[in-house]
Image (cartoon, rainbow, N blue to C red):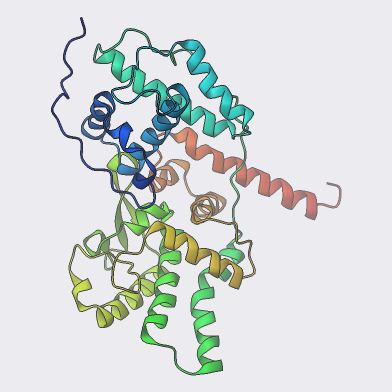
Length: 344
């Protein structure tokens, strides 16, 4: 007989992620084993809300396939699925044309969930144990050149100045929006941080005198990232304007980057605003903030930075993850050679 779980009666923390938690079926969160798994993720694995939501979305897709409503309602019969059901769940993504990385993430999520149930002696067999995901195609990350990055970083202030010359002085909030966007783009490239890490920055995490920011990355691990002189100047100007518009934003817990109502600027807003400045800079609008992270790492290695140092700056747990950028640098050298050498 299965022993009672240590998580019975323990209420998991609410999941509050813009545009994500609302898409989860409420029935899933009513399942006792799912709530125990959420508590395990947050309490033992120190998983972020984004990570927990990713697991839950994958579980919700499995539930929808294994027990389509209104056939079964929670608590779900998690012991019922066998290896054939688990394999069929993964095959449906391949048939739908999903990327191999997507299918492998689904496998990882369900395998982790069932492994947790095994550990808690809630069931005996993990139907996802031993299953292999599709082979990944290793693609080199797309990066911007140094000139392209510079053009992008200058776009917000340049467009603001051009607008003021054509139509008079802009409204204070419009000036702040341009200066703020210039600042967060500078910070993204200067630190190599993820966009979620930059969006979550508060005043107490930024040390302008010390030229550093303390970001919280995956697994809620904190690390220091360096700020270059241009990013410091951009931040100083953005903070000065935000204090004039919203004096209460001077508190240590206040977000560094604010929307036009004085609240924290979201990741989605940063991504949307960056697309606007990409177009203004004559660059592909499909580029994402993560491409600035790729560019940061590649440019450092191109300039002779030590691989271990780049690993620390990026917050990678494994050096293998960072090594992909050395391949990018080699490919760029080959491309330069092919174009420049007379007998290439």
